Length: 424
Ligand code: GLU
Image (cartoon, rainbow, N blue to C red; front, side, top):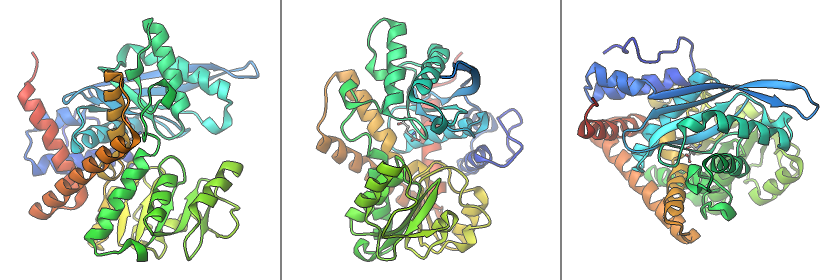
């Protein structure tokens, strides 16, 4: 089967090429008709906006912003908002498509979306970020809503960003709309457990993967790329489960301790200095080496496309757990499969964030707050269910976990589509 001409087909390598190739494979396995394959490969709605910002020094700068709504078949579109200088439309399209599959795989009643602004939050003041966020929100306001498309944090954004979006949206509507975003501060209707949900899910899945390969956490070692929202918590929860986290990296450096890093002390160092670099009691290493260290489990928890044709042959870990979205390129995926390295795909491994986003939205709709215990228990239950679904499908059909996860997710979206029919 060839890719349909009118589906979005990028020419250069990148996350959208990988996302489209994954869909292509799933469509072939499911023997989807070309038209349906094309429908799933094309975002339902996209918006590109210019965001003018008055900088603190009085000058004006203009940034590109996007919101892509990939699919609405199973419910409102759902997905994060990313602030990074490298953001472009194809990246946002890929991330939106992955959100559709992720939500279907963990069976939350959402489609997929993603937003992005091509801005470096590290070189802007809080006041500037607030102005950019409010202007971006007002530009995309006609296409978002608690029953339409619900943003959440991603790279470069956080609960404060969500508070600004909620406020801007609510002011425009004339009343407070808590269900417009998830990942909000607790005092504005956020959920207990949301901040650590992605990491908790990553660690939970990593432990299930270790158990499936007969690895005892008490004797296991790990390396984590990224020490932000996902990487920090993943390192912490793995260390709490007895795993020696030998190395972590961030954009400024990487640190290594053979007997395991003290994650709490490292987090305090990062709190003070803004980076893992310079942490005492650990050796500085080349950040690029973190993915190929001699450890049992590697957790890429930063950005897309970091496991490539070049470094995949050097991966020594037996398990890769994708904390980030799209960290493994198609070429690297094939190499890791060949080398019998277990890759737990992003749409399964990092789905904890959107699962608790769903819980947050449910709580907002009910105007009722659940306990942290309740949230965490329900999260683990859903993650375990999705894990078992993927393992069973992979075993029954001789597929990799990524193939199995994508096929299961695509099939759920297709089933919903068939039941709804095509209008008109
Ligand atoms: N940005 C997160 C992700 O990639 C969370 C999305 C959400 O909670 O809507 O899964």
